[in-house]
Length: 92
Image 1 (cartoon, rainbow, N blue to C red):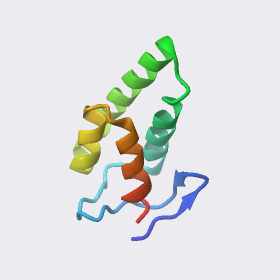
Image 2 (image 1 turned 90 degrees about the vertical axis):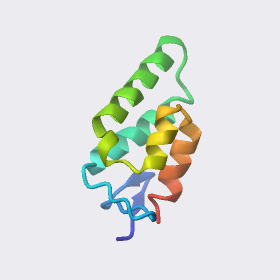
Image 3 (image 1 turned 30 degrees about the horizontal axis):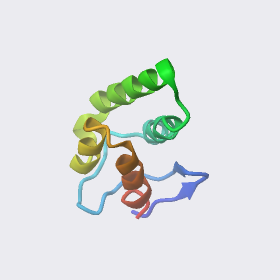
């Protein structure tokens, strides 16, 4: 199923090219992850710590439904790679 991107928000159900289907994720959850990842570039001090903790919490909530590559990027705090993954793999 193709994806529709509108103002950087993911608007369709998710199918990753490696045949992993992220059935447990809803669109607001993915949009929240994208917002959290984008906020890291502007966060400082305790705001940065809070953003990282919120991403960690998001990962624990949705881990079972994620493509292993995205899980790897988030768990290792490779946030730039996670954002690239969302933009390229999810956008297919």
